[in-house]
Image (tube, rainbow, N blue to C red; front, side):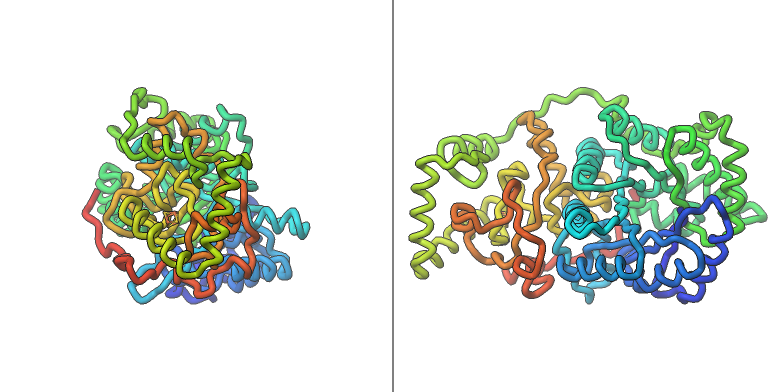
Length: 493
Ligand code: SF4
């Protein structure tokens, strides 16, 4: 599969010409049409995909959550069905570059896969869903959560996984082994990015989000760029080596990016075929990771220690029927709480006072944003609203060494994983957390919980206009919240 970057800068006609050329290469099964690549507005991927298909190439349409809410995403999916385009690459998407762009992020990737799988089942639309996975994470929690989240995507209905860009055979092998050991039989496509000097230097700083070029790779490419062909031969050879390694490891295919030249792609494929018998030697040529970073096969056992807050809240959850108690039984205590909260809910001054009390208490402790659908108990008491993209099922792929893609903070999922590990509850993190009912923003999540109004694990609400944001993006723009100021520059990693 070849990535077709439908960027705003590139004339659509150029992309169509590329598609026509790629359609003549029998080994290419599809063109993957990007949307919001690197956080930048691009051409409409559905429109581009339609034209790509008219030129004989099957499109795989990137569908992101950046600027569409649940209703709009379903419209796009129905449009795709009407146009006969059924291959979807379901991703959360990068935070938009430029401070004037207001994103939506109503859903995230796991919820998006769930939504597509529901349409597939209920309306018999045979969507084929690919999802993203980044094995190229070199800090413990970041790496382990990526794998765990892939398991959630598979459980939600993903058909295929495509890796993030990376040049580390050991990590490609790690991902394959992780899935094989768990009996997760999903085709894998390995990303083969033809990396030139300028892009390598940008990726050295973690830009675009989730793409990291290690120092050794950058310096090798800089040296190669002094050759008369400006390093082109070396980078195509590296790409061919990577394709051979993927074949040897048992990947279903390669996802080639970084070039739109049909001749280059043809060369890579032919050269990879020659290299296949010695793929293990090729693996030594594609070994650009972090030698001191986290690898599953050499990770030392860790004894994590529990911290004060989760211990106290666990104890409170056991003694009281609180939302985080995870006890679904209809106990006498719960019935009493339901009566109490019904009465509070029916008495507006009391309800308003209670909402304020809950909000300010939880804001001080958890950074609560009053989403109205509290899932603290499913996220080790870390509030999902403290993540700029409001992810509820695990980190996005944009982290760099455990740091957030959007703001200067540690990724909130590092803390979630550490707490779960300390409490021996990592398997519980695999539980699907549905999208919140956005109509409940600003209301008491405790009242909503006891009156069964909220959307939470085990009690999902429909993804339609009745739960969609009334004002897309409002949940990202609460007045009390300090606005997220996207990073403009990162220091070299
Ligand atoms: S109610 Fe929502 S915003 Fe508040 S702590 Fe719970 S999950 Fe976070």
